[in-house]
Image (cartoon, rainbow, N blue to C red):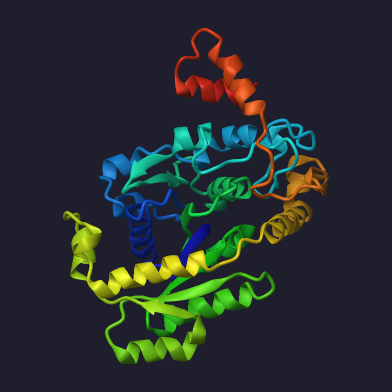
Length: 348
């Protein structure tokens, strides 16, 4: 299942997403965590040192290689340069699996709290004043568009704050979106934005009340978000200790908070998987982006990249071209390292 955490800046979405990731991993579920927020704090929230978190390879920096890998031998995509963040997979594309032996997971993901963590990366000096952050989150959108997640597998994405997620079609890439809201007017205003912007896209949205002090706070949230309110969590000494860098374990949480995490997982598991809708929306946003800017940017009609007979899902056969590329690369001198295999496989 693909899961997003969104909310107002400072609402606690990174903290709650990290707790949910820890909860899933502790239950033995395969989990890939993705930090797609401009403020890259998920690694530290998952227990990494600031130095270790800063050293994680950035998906945004490897976007060209990600594109080259994912396009595989799809005849509709004649070069990685012609791929954009919305390019959907088709026959011949390389599809990803959480437990797969592919260079995206093996090169860009690092262990963190029992999960594997990938990051979009922060702004570099070259980015300042030149590009928007969605040039980096485009790597996540491509990743999600090509990922076939199976039962009991999770991808949890800590998204950009506020309504920034609507600058791309990534908000439709999730089976369930958790919106973290404080019991304040500003907190529920983001919920209203989401329901308004996502109204036409059948986005499954549930609200987690955070920093809740008592029944009045719960009543305020219920008044403004109604049945979308899934559960509430309050102030936690254990969470504060975690945020201060002190040792932390899920067992340190109060029972109410452990129950809330189990409630989140139950809500995700109850969601039906709709691969045709997922594919249809990918195509819709690809066409929208093609008309708006991508055709002009690439000099090509990107509608031609759409494979009308392709529906992403677990019944799709896995492309064999990656195995062929690895075998050929491994047979060459000097390709003993995984980094060299990545370079060779994605340029062959």
